[in-house]
Image (cartoon, rainbow, N blue to C red; front, side):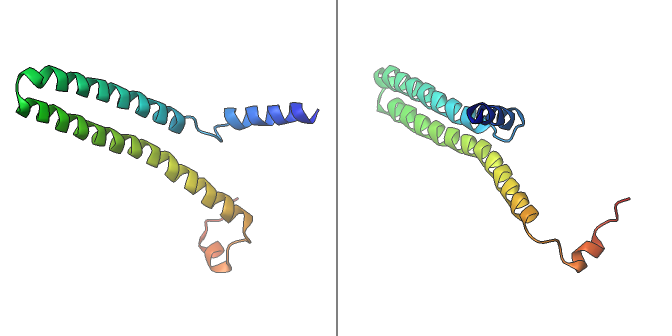
Length: 112
């Protein structure tokens, strides 16, 4: 019975959006993007070898810059979810603490 309740609670935890899957998907998309950028960069580097060293260097720099920009964009996506997780932790910590001081309670709007 305990095992069944554990599975059920994990299902509700997942369905209740307590655990977000977007950060996992962002990481997966990040690695797929890295592979695509590297394949494109190697292809550009090899195909530009007949055009001279300048084109090869340009292909190398473009590949490295693309990898850097892709990393920054992926980090921005992850950052949004990390901020959310920290805010949830702060909310939970504040909920476990003692009631707010009288000065703060008097400033809060009255509920009917």
